[in-house]
Amino acid sequence: MRLSDSIESFIKTLLNEESTEVELKRNELAEYFGCAPSQINYVLATRFSPDHGYLTESRRGGGGYIRIVRVVESGAQRLMYLVNERIGDAIGEEECIRLISQLKEQRIVTADEAALMAASVSSRALGVPLPDNLKNALRARIMKSMLMTLASQNRT
Amino acid sequence: MRLSDSIESFIKTLLNEESTEVELKRNELAEYFGCAPSQINYVLATRFSPDHGYLTESRRGGGGYIRIVRVVESGAQRLMYLVNERIGDAIGEEECIRLISQLKEQRIVTADEAALMAASVSSRALGVPLPDNLKNALRARIMKSMLMTLASQNRT
DNA sequence: GGTATTCTGACTTTCTTTGACCTACAGAGT
DNA sequence: ACTCTGTAGGTCAAAGAAAGTCAGAATACC
Image (spheres, chains in turn purple, red, brown, green):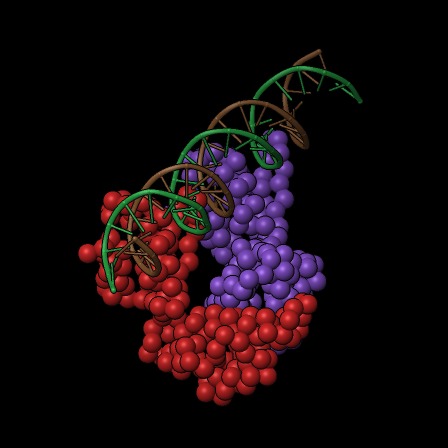
C-alpha cells in the first residue's frame, strides 16, 4: 500500500464521520505518518483536487491549518461542468480515465458504467491509424456525448 | 519449454486459484523467472490480449502493479459472440443501435448503459472530419472494447 | 537458409517521496 | 505602530520506484 493511499483513506474516514468538512494540521499528520510534510500537499493535489470534488483552504503561521471541504453538487451539475468547461476540444486517455474514476467515486456513475466509458475511450478502442491529436479530439467528443446522455437521464 | 510458456501457465495457475483476477508486480515476476522485465509485457501482449479473452490494466511509479482479468465466458457468451463473429472490422451507426437495443431487450445491459453505448458510437461523438469507412472501423473497435468490458464483469 | 517467434537492454513515461528553501501569520517586546 | 522571531504551511526540483516501448539480437521452426 502506498503512503499516499493511506493518507488519502485516513482523510476520507474523517470526512465520512465528521461530515463534509475536516480541519487538520499538516505537520501533525506528517508526523503521524512519518513522512515529509510536503507529502501531505502531494496527496491534496492528487486526490483532493476540485476535479475530485474537494476544495481546500489553509492558513500558515501560528495556529495554521488545512481545511478540506467535500463539494456537494448534483450529478447533472457535475456532468455539465465537465462537458462545458473541463473537457476541451481534445483530451488524452489517462486524463479521461481519471475523470471517469472520479465520477465513479462521486457515485454519479456506477462501476459498470464507468468501465463502459473507459472502454470506449481506451487506446484499444481508438487503435486505428490516426494522429494523436485527432484521437484526442475524438475522445473529447465521445466523452461529451456520453456525459450529455448521462445528464439527460435524471441523476441526482 | 519456452520461458513465455512458463510465465503464461504460471499466471494462468494464479487465475485458476484466485478466480478471475490477479494483480502482480512486473519486476518481481521477472526476477522470479530470471528474465528481463519487458519479457512480461511480451507475454501479456501475446497471451493475455483481449483477443485471448483477457483485459489488463496497470500503474507505473512507486507501488505500481499489473492487473489481469480473465473474461468469463459463462454469462457472456452472447457478448463474446458479438465480439468475435457478429461485428467485423467495421459497422455503421444504425446497426450499432440495433445491436445495442437488442442487448437492452435481452436485459444484458440496463437502459442507462445502452444509452451510454449508443452515445459513444453516435455520429455526434464521431463527428470529426474522417472518411466513413474509418468511422465505421472506429465504431467496430469501440463497440468491441465496450462489449468485452461488459463480458468481463460477470453478468447473468 | 529464411521466416516467425521470443528475449533483452536501453531509453521513456508516470507516479511517489523527500528535502531545501520560501512565504505568511501571530504574538511578544520595543 | 513596528520589528523580531517562532510557527506553520507552500513550492519546486530532484531522486526513487515501477511499468511501457521498441529496435535488434537470439532462438526455434519449417
